[in-house]
Length: 308
Image (cartoon, rainbow, N blue to C red; front, top):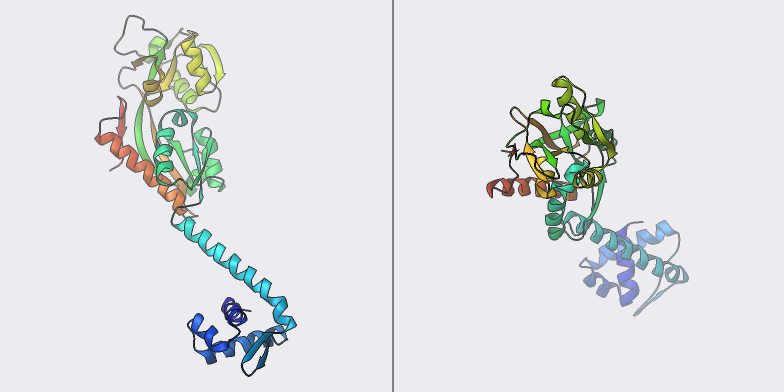
């Protein structure tokens, strides 16, 4: 049974005339009659009583009529749904990002994307880069922002584009002597507010301190991004944060002396499965947003665009 045959059947049922039905569906009358006969042979029953000047539905035709209407309506609904998705009036994007980027970069990008494509649903998953790489490789995300280089066996299955190099800075509730810069060695013996295990920022801070020859002390540890900011504002201690987060925090920001601390932010997606149109549009929105911000001088101090 073909959709075309059902359309021809429906046209005859509504016009009660083969010639007028053929005109309505823009086909020659012999071709329409041939297709109706083929449909009847497949179903094993006549659909129309054919008498000169009078076309009427048989019992079999009466039974098929509402089903044919429903099938054709569902087909049109499916066509429109696909067309809307292709034209980005509908769809879904699953984005992964570290909490630090969900606090800084992601909201601005999603606002622009939402303004352009209000019908596309957005699903955001926060996590550390290692977890995001695994989730992305498993097909549970469409695109993710990660800190490079990505680790794990799954990273080889990803297409990674570096976006930004961002400085890490020290933030505190109040200035102590208003230093222009601070050295990593000056964190020795100074209790820090520290993120929970699994945060890229925790690992970067620990690695920098160990490279400087000491283990850092913690005033409090185990927080998520909002908790860490709250602890610093409460005066529990300073914390090492990305420049983009620090710029919005309202806290006192002190850069590290050269070579300083930094991280590289990238956007990644799977090699094997092509991006959906909605995911590709989100990726392009992200790249355009960063280029526009760089041209306008709106990137925080110490943040450098890596895109061409």
